[in-house]
Image 1: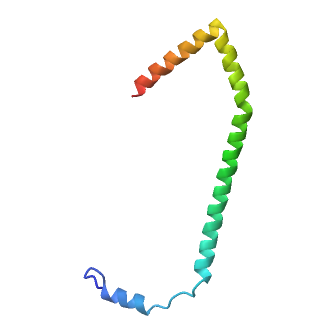
Image 2: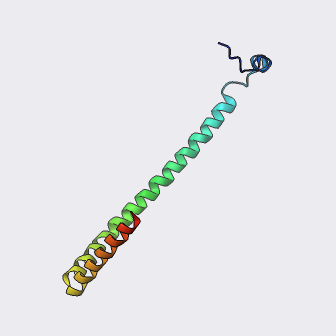
Image 3: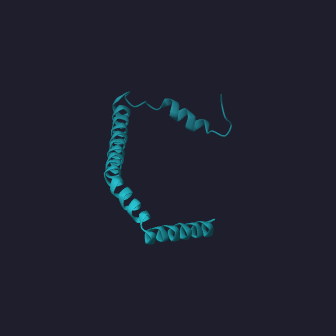
Length: 94
């Protein structure tokens, strides 16, 4: 299959050029890429686990503070004001 847009001289040069030794450069490059990819994956997993552990440790305290705040009349008013302000802010964004 030939393409009229390709330079025949360039095609001839590519066909006659010696090929690099199989396996050495390509295998080393692929190994480096896979190692870097694996390292990024491990860092992401460790970061995700740290965030999840911190969230699980903090969640009971956040729930307790939230319930305590909702129990008081002043807290209930603050929560309602915060929800109204949040709703107004969301409407302005859309």
